[in-house]
Every structure is written in structure tokens, then in C-alpha cells.
Amino acid sequence: MKDIVLKKIDDLKEQMIADIIEVVKIDSVGGEPLPGMPFGKKVNECLIKALEIAGKLGFQTKNIDGYAGYAKLGEGNDYIGVIGHLDVVPPGEGWIEPPFSGYSKNGRIFSRGILDNKGPIMACLYALYVCKECSVTFNKPIRIIFGTNEETGMKDIEYYLKNENPPAMGWTPDCKYPVVYGERGRAKFKVSANKSNLNEFFDFVTKYFLQSKDNGERLGIDFSDDEFGKMQMRGYELKLEENKCIFNFTLSYPAVTNISDIILQVNSKMPKRLSIELIHNYNPVRFEKDCFLVRKLKEAYEEVTGLDGTPVTTTGGTYAKLMPNIVPFGPSFPGQKGIGHNPNEWMDIEDIMINAKIYALSLIKLAGESYE
Image 1 (cartoon, rainbow, N blue to C red):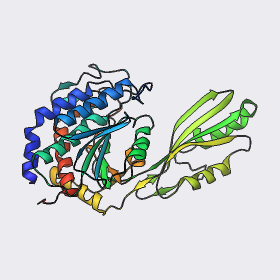
Image 2 (tube, rainbow, N blue to C red):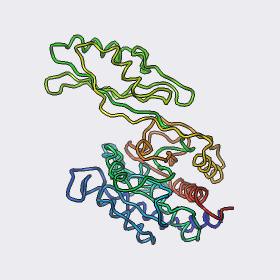
Image 3 (cartoon, one colour):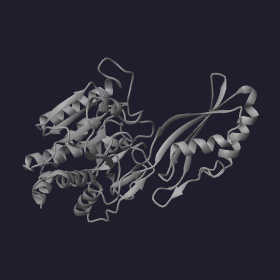
Image 4 (tube, rainbow, N blue to C red):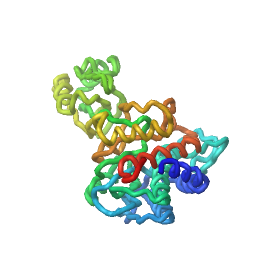
């Protein structure tokens, strides 16, 4: 079955790449909400196109009020869920070719969203399509879920979970390989002061941030562990807001600590005339490295690539922060960094093909009844 499925992916190369290019040609930067289009007209257009392609491939589809949509194979709530996103960050300047052109050269596609995250989630859709066409029997239904608000708040997942059950297990193809068994926590804070307390404000910011190591040492939050590494302070932003001086900062913290302990320790360093507010927090995500999900994704990655699939952690943040029971898995291979949000975002066609093969084999390993 494995050889049949992998060959079928090769046979569908031109069709899959054509559909991916059709999707990446849509400018899907989030915009002002409209009726039935909570994240704007352009994102909604991309969602409609992805569901149209899924329908063409023979899947039942569902549009969840413009917040998300999915293609499904099989019935039931105890499903395998694969979720990626169709919204993209603004293209910015510095593109050699127009950012939504689907331009390709020497086997490489350049477009905003080709890697982050349209190419990978469409590769997952085709992975499921190939399994269907090859008559793979699954013991669980499978959904390929298209998100629309990953880049600016993940309100799509909040809405999805109010209307649908979470998956029993699955992944998001929006990070890196090998399989990621843990994500750091991420918290954003706002320190504010009245203009009459500017001296205290700037003394605090200078001492604990600008002239301090970025591991939170002076604040007493320099937590570290062998799996996730050290605390990282970043995202510094100084501004005036409603006659107050504001300093924003973000923490990327290891799973050895928690947000309550962090807040307690930071508050112990705060001058009384300043105030601090937790803007938002995403708790760390951690799976056991030998659990069924992580183990099977590791096997699929190693069988397709021949590379070491030892599970890893990440400093990034994905849908796994909000969607229960999923791990980040792909699409970037070791050594591929700094591509997604930069000008001339790219993904090699060969890598798209390898991703589709990894994802097809992963589906079979997680839910296939007759895999050999």
C-alpha cells in the first residue's frame, strides 16, 4: 500500500502544483470584517477556493461561517484533524516578482503564503485525496481544516471549537521537521506609567530590559530546561498611548515554569507607581516523545526521507496552542529557516512532493486499518 500511495502522489504532481498555485495567487491578507466574512473579503475568497478544490477532489466540505472550513473523509466526531491556514501576512517590499503571482523558477515557487501555509495544507489535502483514490481504509474519519486567522489572533480556532469537536489527534503543517513534541509558552505584557512617573518608568525599562540579558535574569524569571532551553524576552515596543508611556514585551518561556509564577515574580520587581498587564498568554504545549501520535509521525518522516526523526521542540507558536491534541509537523526541513514572512517567500516543488508523501504515510499510520 505504501508504494502504491507514494507513486500516486508522483503521478498527481502537475495537478497538485496547479491547484496550489491557484490558491497562492489569491491575496489573502486579513481585512475588515464583512457579513459572512469575519476576516475580510480576500481571506474569504481563498477559503471558498480551497473548499472548491476539495469538492472537485470528491470530498464533502463545510464552511463554518467564514471562520474556517474543512474537507472530510468519513463520518464521526472522533476524527484525525490536520489544520493549516490560508491567511497570510502582508507581502511588504523587496519582491523580485509580484508576491501573489505564483511565479516559479528552477523548480521553486515564489509567492506570499506558498510555505506559510497554503502549500503545506494543500499538500495535506492531496495526501488525503491520494489515500482515498488508492482505497486506503481508515478506522477514523479525517478532516483537512482550513483556518483563516492564524496570523492575527487565531479567532478562527476559537470559533471552530465553539461549533465543532476538537480532533482526537492530528497535526498542523506550519512549523518544521522532525515532528515537534513541544512548543514554548508565549505571553505579552504591557507596562504603563503616567507622565508624572516617567523617571521610574524609564529606570525600570532600562534596568530590567534594555541593559539586561534577554533571558530575564534581572527580573528573576530566567527559567530554563533541557528540552526548551532558556527564557527569551523580545518584542520590545515603546510608545505613547492615551497620555501614558507604554512598554510592551513578549516572553517565550519553557514548560518548566507557568504564567502564574512568571507574573508573581515580575510583579515583585515592579515599582508601585507603574502598572503591568498581561495582554495575552498561550501556555506551553508538550506531548510525550513516545506517545502514539509523535511516534507514528516520526516513523512516517523517517521512512519517506531517510533522515533522523528524533522529535524536537520549537520557540514558535502554531495552532497547537489552541487546538487540542495536535502537534506541529513540517513543512520546513532542517536548515530551512527565515523563509515564511520574508520577501520572496519560497517552497521547492520537490519539497512539496516530499511533504505530501510524508503526510499521506502519516495518515495511514495514524488511522489506516491495513497498513503494511
